[in-house]
Length: 205
Length: 118
Image (cartoon, rainbow over all chains, first blue to last red):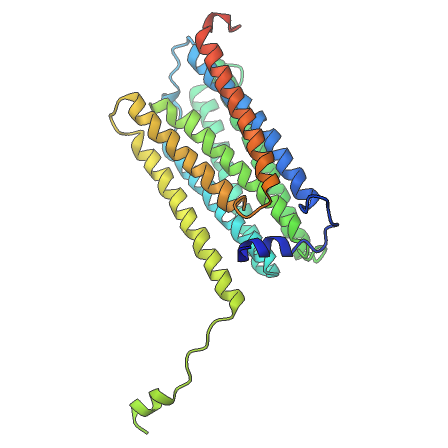
């Protein structure tokens, strides 16, 4: 067993033993992420299908700002890296290092949300693209908005962990809680990787 | 005492503790992966600006996107070191999602007049 694997399995001391050897919270999170894959899969395919059959003269390239979206993709990737380091720090029992990394993840998550709020408000005010204006608007806002809601939930979750730890109500002694939050955060990142390619980049092909 | 003698008698540099070495190793692995993912994003951004035919742009974009996806899932989500059941559950959901997407795309590309628009 590699040292990383040993680290990952050694810190589940506060979890009750299970038949599978996998903590229940972690197994439940993987099952949830698998179901969320299907949820986002249908949203993305709906957007792509309606893009194909949309007969309007509207050209999404005229509104989508690739530069800004590339930066926000980079921001989310950096947050994923910091989340990995936070989980690693918790496994090594370095509570305050983990809190620092988690705070940075929250900060980068908020930057991403800021970019999304800017993008949405820009589309609405400059291009009058709303949820009900046309097919592109409907599928685009539902899909990216659902992803944004996932990011917002992640930010809320991680910031509550940070605040509870700072207030002394939690001491981060249960590594599996942070690991599960980390899985969720990384999932939000991979969903954005797919949305960025399928929705933004493919418009330029 | 000459400088040479002092150097000969100097204590060897203390080895950093094992947990610090492990921390540094994990930090560098994570940093390398993050750097790779950022480079892939930059490459995607460059590729879409190239005046190539559509398929020549689309294929590298899909490949790079899959690389990023796999990079995050395998290393950042620890799937590489996790129990096989976790991989099975996640890949199962992913295959179902991908299958649904491909089926829908093929179905509606073949029969566009069946789509209820408006």
